[in-house]
Length: 475
Image (cartoon, rainbow, N blue to C red):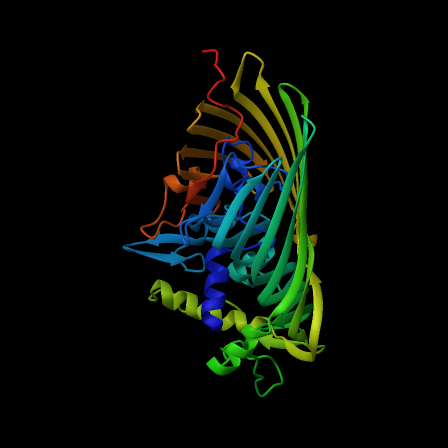
C-alpha cells in the first residue's frame, strides 16, 4: 500500500487536488445539443429527452497538471530512470521543475441518467460514481530529494505540501424552466453518499543535517474516513504499509450505512439580445457528514531519516528506483494518530461558471463564446478562462473548438456532437495537445494535462433545439 501510494505521488508529481465536482467537458459549454450541458449549468435544457446507455452514456477521465513524465523520467542507455538517478544532473532536472507542481486525477462514471421535457420544463435524473485523487508538491521538495547536502546545503524549509482523496456517489434531480422568451433558470438537488476520504496537509517541513542523517520537524495534520483499518507501528505512528480494506462482511455493513451529504447546483441563462446570451452557474454547494473519522498529526518531537542520497540507483530498474524512493519518503513523513470521531462534516468544493455567447447576426449557427471558471477549494483553488468557436453545421452535427488560459498553462480543446433521430453521440477533450505524444500506455509525456469525455445516449421525444426544420439558414 505504501509503495503504491508513494509511487503514484512521485510519478505524477501528482497533484494539487481540487476535488472537482465533476470532470465536466468545459469545451462543451456552448456546444449545440450537448446532452450533459445541464451538469455545467442546470438552467440549460436539452434539445430532446435522453436515456443514458449504462457504462456508455458518459465516461469522463481527466488529468490536469503543469508537469509531464519527461520531467520525472529520463533515458539512460536502453532504459528509463527517475530524476534521482546519478545519470540525471541537478541542472537538467531542476531546470525543468516549476515551483508549484500541481495535478488532478478524477473520474465521473454514470450508472444511469435520463432527461425528459414537460411543457416549458426540462427534468433530469442521474446516478454517478465520482473519484478524485491528487497532491500538491512544491519544487523545494524535489530539490531536496535531488540535491540534499551534495552542494553543501545543510538545512531545508519545505512548506505547502498537501493531498486529498475522495470517492462518492451522487443521486441528482435537476429541474430547468424557461420564463418568458429570454430567461431560463434551473437547479439540481443532489443526495451524496461518501465512500472514502483522506485529507493531508503539511504546512511546514524543516530539515537540518545532523551528522549523516537529517533531523526533521513538521507541522501537519490529516483526517481519514473510509472502510480501511489503520494500524500503528511500535513507535506509535501510523504504519503506511498496513492499510487494509475492511473484510467483506464489514465492508457490506459500511456500504449499507454510508456517509451521507447534500449538495445544490444553481444556474441561469438570459438572452440579452437576439444574438447575445449571458449565463452563470454555481455547482456543488453542499456538505458530507463522514463516518468513522480518524484524525492525525505530525509528532511534536523531531525524528531522523537518511535522506535520498546514496540510494544506489545506478543498477536499479524503474520499479526498483521507485521502491527505494518510497522507503525513504515514508521515513521523512511521520504521522501519529490523535483521535477518532463517529461523525465529522466537511464541505465539498464549489465551482462557478460565467459565460457569454455571441452569435453572428447574419448566421446564427456560428457563435463565439467566453467561459470563466473558478474553483473554490482553499489551497487547491484554480481559475480558467476559455474562449471557443462553435458551429452547428447541420441540425444533426455540431463542433466546438476552444483555447484556455489557466493556472495549469494554456490548452486547446475540441468537441463534437452528433444528434441523429433516436441517438446522440458526443466526444471531446479540453486539452488535446498532450495526447499527440504519449507512452504505449497512453500517458502524456510532455504535459500531464488532458481529459477525455465521450458518450452514447438514446434520444427521446421531439427536437426542441435552436434550429427547427422550418428555419431557413442563410448560407
